[in-house]
Each structure stands twice: as structure tokens, then as C-alpha cells.
Length: 275
Image 1: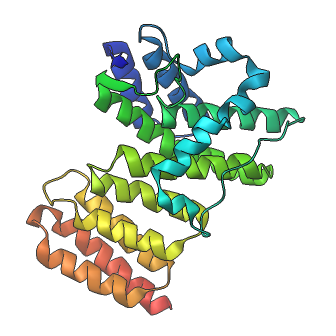
Image 2: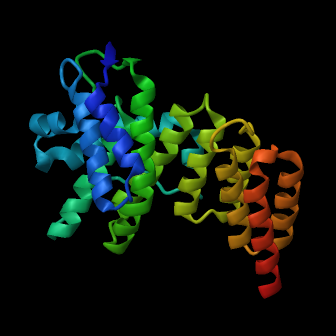
């Protein structure tokens, strides 16, 4: 079955507004509303709000831990069998406090959008082909991904929602693996976020380094990726590697970046003296 994705100017403008705003937990909600509106343009509408109308809020946890979706997670990556990754939750417990209910439901909405269209099982149809404005949808998904890491996973840990936290981490990992396999630089950037949330600090450094190496100096986020890798080395208390990297960066980068790189070099030496 083909699913045609269609953006309009209103949705595109809203996305740009979210990117330019100061991100808060409200930005998380607004990004999910944007995804719901975008998928609601499909025929028939396929946003998360449509799912709630079809299944009801009380049945959502059972729907999201269906055998079909568990098999999807297992089939997409052999790494999911690794002892270092959280296991697939057997069930999502019924939450009772208002705050836990809110964050549990929010997690399921994030999962729905990151895994889309895997939850669209219909009569004898398991294969769905996305067409149309796919790149715009991927941009929305990446925004949701980063906001979930910044604002939702910390709250899940705070409220001890272990199953939701494990579930979201696995879906973020699978999303990075499957959706971005043709864009390895961005894929490794997302992997670094997932592994950071899981506490795999060495893997974070390697992913950030890979993301930088796969990025051309002509790309707009070249220096951003370089700074991310440098910062990870500093945080890991590896000043020698950080200094070696930033000096090599100055030698190999276009002149347009020199002023910013020199500022990082000065900061690197200043931090080294404090150690």
C-alpha cells in the first residue's frame, strides 16, 4: 500500500518556527502536533490522534506491545539481542498517577511517529511505501527524536517509568538504524544520542567522530559536528586527543572556519591548564 505524504506552506512554516525557537518541553508537544497534522493530511488520515479514536486511550499500551511490533524490533537489528541494550518490555504496566499516565502516553505518541508506518497493519497488508514529501517527514522525525532525548527520557527516568524508557530507547535506536542507513553521517549523529542516553560513552565518542569524518567541509553542519566530537573528548577527560584533533582541524579546514576554530584551540589550552 502506498502512503502519499503531502506538506503545505503552513506546516513548513510551523516547522521552521519550531527549529528557530528556544526549545522547551512545549516544543516537544508542538512537534508532535505538527507530525499529527502532517500525517492527518493523508487519505485516510494517519496521525496519532486517529489511532486514539480507533483504539481508545486505555488500549494503547497493549496495542504498542503487540507481537507484531516486538517482532519488528527483533527483525530489524541483531544488535537488539545484545546484552548491552535494554530488552523489549514484556508489557507496559498500567500507570495510576496523572504524571506517569501523561508521560507514558507521550512516549507512545513519540514511538508511533518514529516507527511510522509500522503500526498501520491492515487486512493482509504489511508493506507500506511512503511517497511524496518524505524528506519533510524525516525532518520532523529528527526534531521529535532530539526533543525526546532532551525532554522526555529524563522525565521517564525521574518518574521511574522503566518500561517506557527502555521502549523509547530501542525505538530510537531502530529508527536511526533503518531510516538513516543511506545517510551515515546523520545516522551516527543520532546513534551518539541514543548511546549517550544508554550510558555507552565510548560508543558516543566513536559515533561523533564517524559523523564528523563523513561530513564534507562544504556542508553547513561541518563545524557543528567537529565541535560535538571535540566536546565529547573534553567531557571524557581526553585533553590530548582533543588538542590533537582541533589542531588537525585547523590545518585541514577551509579558511572561512579559521576564526571559530582558533577560539576552540584557545579554549582547549585553557582547559588543559586547569587540569
